[in-house]
Length: 258
Length: 287
Image 1 (cartoon, rainbow over the protein chains, first blue to last red):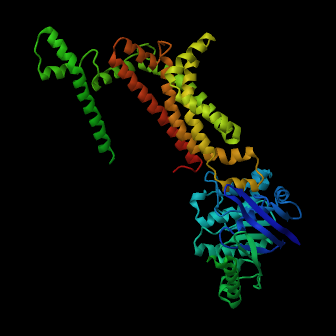
Image 2 (cartoon, each protein chain N blue to C red; image 1 turned 90 degrees about the vertical axis):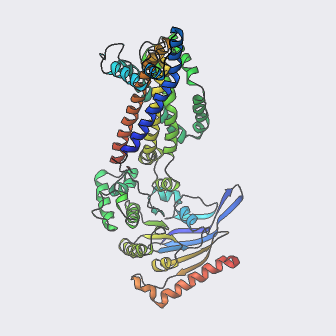
Image 3 (cartoon, each protein chain N blue to C red; image 1 turned 90 degrees about the horizontal axis):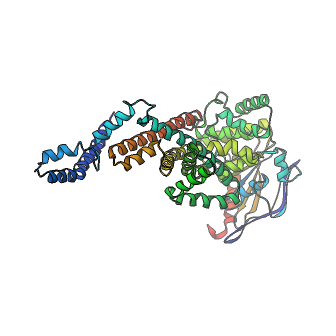
């Protein structure tokens, strides 16, 4: 079942220096339960595309549907949770208070709020940290809390914009593993923006390679890797072959600029 | 404890400068008096005299301290000669003015942050209001209000509010705009209304800015209340005390009133700093 459907999507920003083509002719459909990574150099429109799905930007050409309706309608239907690069937790709220924030805004009943917070904190391995404040947690734990917050209202789609970009590699590896486990348990559809090739290959069922000026898709790679992926899979020939193809795609997209 | 020595050094240096200034500025009167009486006086007499003149150009610190002690501690607080009583009169106008000014400042900032039209139309007037000398505005406020039958505390409080709303507007506009684009986008993905964005994010995020501007604002409130007491020829309040001191050349009295005003301002700023510590700590935002 198709969850996200983009047909010839174009997005042009009007700036003082003339129009900037952030996206051009992007056609892609994402099925339920897929883990799709968007990879490319900065300016390739990967974040813009994710933001367009979340109705934070609006395409100027083509059509984009989420769950068969417009992105705006999908937002109202609480179709997706969005995880930003920074955890963005409120320092004046405890971890539980931060996770509860979207539930308060959406008007969930109080008793249900508490139950949901407890459930998603367990899901990201943060039981017992509900009463702590963000500054008492490490960067990795803060980002886990922000994932819990995005999951709290049971959206079927999880959109993640370089969520682990600011973390060191050891923490990033662990969170990647945990994210795969979370995905297996919940069956969410995940859109994931990254500029790390190993991260994209390790996580995704499909990798979308993008290139800049104008932002467009240059390659879509179906991953032959099984859904069950230990970290060691990164040393297998299959993994290295996909990583190589991604790198080739990135180089081709860059043309003679690199 | 290691800060005691530097702090004391500065204090001693200030007192030494003050005494030197008193000798230099009051010495002339001592020599003139001696010349008129036809007597020669030496350095020792000049020094002694400059420390205890009735109406010195610059009273010596111990004279100010003595006057301060006499009018604060040794006088009944209900007496019109008590600095505590005068301080209380000024303090009540300051408190009302501070409350009015901060409330107005917060409301204006909320309007400015939420409406582009208000941002463009209100901010220039707020800035203009502060460039007009308060000494020029104060008499007009007093006269206009008294012609409408409003006298006493309120006109002073309004002048006080006039000075105190501005730092709050500037600080709160900055504070309410402190959340970054990412935090605002995040709220949009949850479909938060403007009211929810305000109560859940903008207002709590602005608290450190609010307290910083309240500290500036409370000191400005006190200045406003004192200035408000001058043009009406008021008989009560620290401003009135300054005024009568200057009428009768009672420099010691003026300096004691100034000292009282400074102490009051320090106490008010300290009070707000205390509230700030408690509030920010309870919010988990203390540094």
